[in-house]
Length: 221
Picture (cartoon, rainbow, N blue to C red):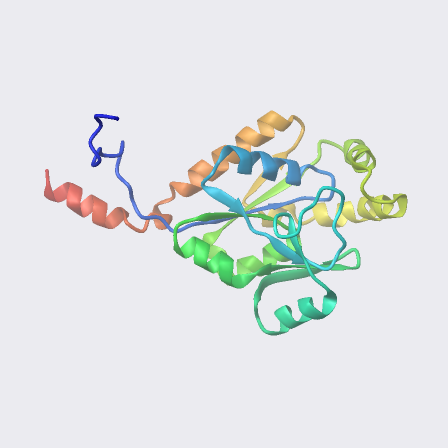
């Protein structure tokens, strides 16, 4: 049995904080999903927002973990009833973010990661701008982007061609983001993403308990 007292203090003060929404966007194949998974694996303080989608599941995807797979009729019902924070139509499929779970998470001080496109990021900015941190992921070159899409081998050739033709339009939205990562070396990109998250968690306006902490600190000096 441990001799450590049950009321052992934590190292450093705990200051109440409002959660944040970390958005990753990129053209398909630039690596945002790989970066998202690496961040989730290394930081238990952030969890992935699970979107609803009308597209079929891909090999290895699990319903409820990667996406909530639903039909178009159910998607339309959620959208029309205001239950989606954002939604978009991408390559003949619909994607959206359920509202209730996200708003509850950030109010309780939890961080939420979004793997969404620029359309979704714009809609989130309209609704929760103060909670939003936007990161755009760029490929190091067009050749690398095309090679990654073909290597992934999850989509037929005509879909890969469509994604390449759309990439330039998607990349044009990079100035709307707070940060940009050029995903040349995966480990460097992961380190950059972690640094962004750490800095954003320390922003004064997110530390809801900071004023009380400082007043208490001053009273004891």
